[in-house]
Image 1 (spheres, rainbow, N blue to C red):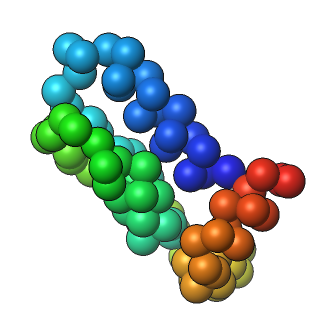
Image 2: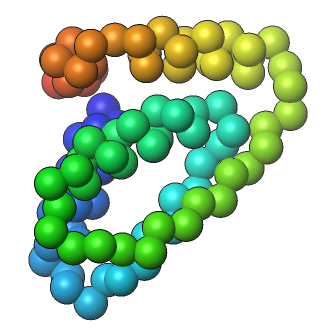
Length: 89
């Protein structure tokens, strides 16, 4: 689950206090989900970072359209359901 991935990154950053910058590299398909998960994982975090992003544009295709619809459905899930589904994936 992507949210669990961000929590692992947060734990790594806690263990390494020299980290000051975070760069997020993502496709243009799931930017909203990445931002949501990042904000959830770091919402109560005590350190501030310079956060940059780099978005890779994926050419249009049938599968990109399907994936975007899937991402919209996932974003619409309540957070508790999103976390529960991720545990059993």
